[in-house]
Image: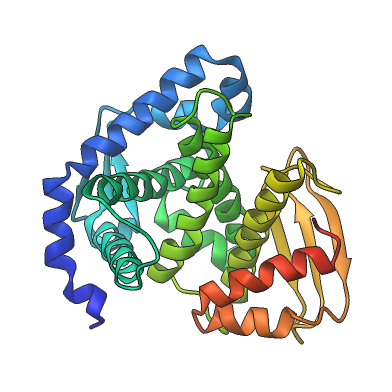
Length: 302
């Protein structure tokens, strides 16, 4: 049992004390209101989230059977898997404790609360997005993997990662063109990379997951470049990406997923790629994220 599993009792108390279920419900309510009242949000997120949110009557973080995976829903009542949420909380708290110990940042109780509320809400929005993708049932996901391999599910997941990040950011800002929105979107992408892939780690046996991590890192790198320069040479600053990496880990292709999938770039003999992939496989996500910026620039994805 890992040290994070040993922290489950602490994390479960945090769930109760901070009323995280209520925070998730409030985020979903705000998003649904935005979809109803803001034409830009409706155009961006309406079809993706309105059907997934409009029938909800209750959200709770509670134990669920393994057969349901990360969440279950019945008659409008959503249950987020308490074990997985507790592990997410443990990773967030450990990361913030580490930053505080290294004197990297000054952290207040409000910072801790806000980060936990955003991270757990992002987790919930990702899972709820699967409802409109048709893959909300854990059994359906397993069947699809058996029929079509893992690549299709990885594509669903990266799109859900992106859509959940945009949705969360929309609830934190007055408009999707504001600096406040981009700050929140950037944080959400970071949470996905830094925390979710601690719960569900990538490794050499899961190239689909390695490619998903790479895609998120490239999305984050492109967003930061866009914010500094005001433009990108190719593709949109908020679109989901898909990444394919060759078996020898020397070449890659990057695709933009929306409004229709198209190739953004393909490159052979990418110098930093083998080490980048190795760092993802070994869980060295901070090092990999730094290399993602170099790769994005070197292959003309900036």
